[in-house]
Amino acid sequence: MILIDPGEAPHLPSALMSMPHRLLSSLEEQTGADIVLSTWSAPVSTDSLAWQHVQRGVGYQIKRGADLVASIKDGRAMYQLSKMLETWEECWGVFVGKIDAFQRDTWHLSIDERDARFTYPAYISHVRNWQRAGGKWLPLDPNYPFEQWVEDELQRLGTSATERTLRKPSLSLIPLSPAEETLATFPLLGPQRARALWNYLPLNLIDQTLTQALVYLSDGWATRVEGIGKGVVEAARRHLGLKEHENLGIYIDDDFSKLKGE
Figure 1: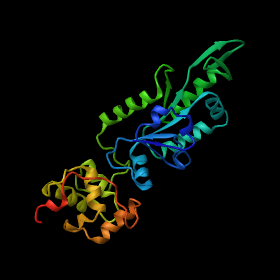
Figure 2 (figure 1 turned 180 degrees about the vertical axis):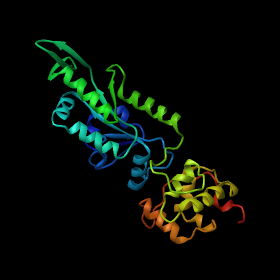
Figure 3 (figure 1 turned 90 degrees about the horizontal axis):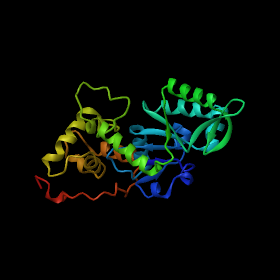
Figure 4 (figure 1 turned 60 degrees about the horizontal axis):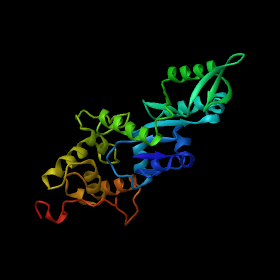
């Protein structure tokens, strides 16, 4: 899933915008990132769920042409990095374009074969400061299509963890799987109820996936699980941003009418 700040959307290639994505207002303002890539399996049907994808994903600040130089000069780039580091352990600055240097009276920065009116040593100094602060920097090869890079980056993230969890794990002595850890972050649920809900799914002919668990919880079926009442379900629905007659909009292959015990 790709979460995109609306201000960045006009600059992205149409091929990327045809991939699964969601525009998320104030994304850059709140996190410093232009886009966030997430491999979390939960649906993105509400802004509340989208922001949970943001927390579990990786943030990227995209720089192009003159914007790169301007953001270095006014300090905006480092401020954006500081905001990103408040949200993610892994965050990137990505320059899209051809970057080089040429010699005149001193080394000048060349962006897309044009004089950027900025010295190359100053650019290198910025990159080093970015990396010292904890960020990662990537000058993207001009021959590497941006949308292909996004696909490859999502694949890289997916191989590192099947489910990316919050940076701050729940305080629990119960060893939880990544999916149980995610469920435990929901209000009123906690580690024990999260485990009970997770273990209940395969016993009732439902695939044991995080998406199924969220649907089962938000649609009210979870009240069949010991310890989970209507109050827990309502708290979860509010957490997901669902209104009274809304659901997550996911069709489950299993027929709930065929649950064991019915």
